Length: 176
Image 1 (spheres, rainbow, N blue to C red):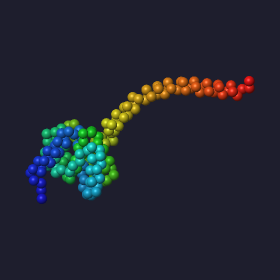
Image 2: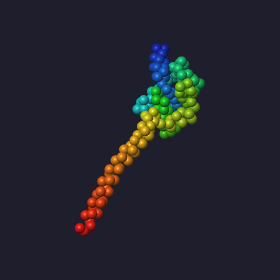
Image 3: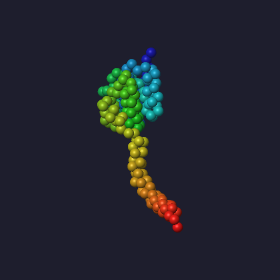
Image 4: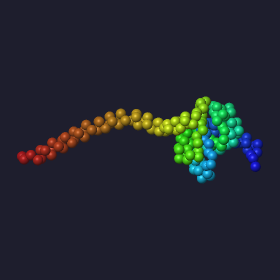
């Protein structure tokens, strides 16, 4: 039995709400995935903060119609899973990683800020570090000179103390 009109409207509204908040939408074909495989994919997506949903393509077209992702409409063919994320990299990373491990999931494309992406673009996007990783790298780069300076400042008194200790040990060895 099909979905009622109200259920379809609710689904379009729910997906449309997620798409409106999103920075990235990635679509992947999921032919012959088992329930266990799909459950695992959903678990990974949830852990990464990705909204993953299987929706009829006609309903998905309606959900993205008046959004920056309207260019995806041409790619919405076949059994597709939609990964929607507010993090620019998360959806691409989750679906690409899973597709690499399971050949039954095939990345078909995606969109990001009024730009439609090919499958290759999505895989390239997935290889980029996340926002948190970039911030951590930036902080490490910014802290490195300060940490090295502090280490150098600490080394001067330490070297002086070691020199005094060596002189003291040498004088004790000499006969008086």
